[in-house]
Amino acid sequence: MAAVDHCLACGAPIDQPRRGRTRLFCGDTCRQRHHRARSRAVFALLTGGSTPPTKVSDLADPDLAVVATVTEAWTVAAKLARGAEAARPELAWRCRKAAEALDAALSRYFAPPVGPGDAPPP
Image (cartoon, rainbow, N blue to C red; front, side):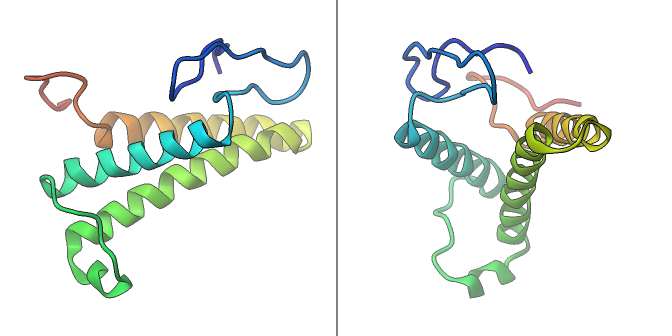
């Protein structure tokens, strides 16, 4: 993972520790804000701007089920990345590679367009 020197949510500078996991956010508030914004963006992209489901029974709609699955997949990618930090070397590289590949695929196919007029990838 590339070195991060600014918070992904607010852009504030981050002092990285010499050892341990690389920090992506300046605090828990920004981490949660980024997670919620990402989830809302995926949901809006997949449902054409609908509001998020409020009940589990709403997931009977196939589009909402896809949104829930994509959100869960991003959670799995994050868990794999965290697991790579603590795992034995024989497992760490596998966790890291799987997390990177899953995150790249999800970003490619489910990330919202960057700007107006941006076309989805082929």
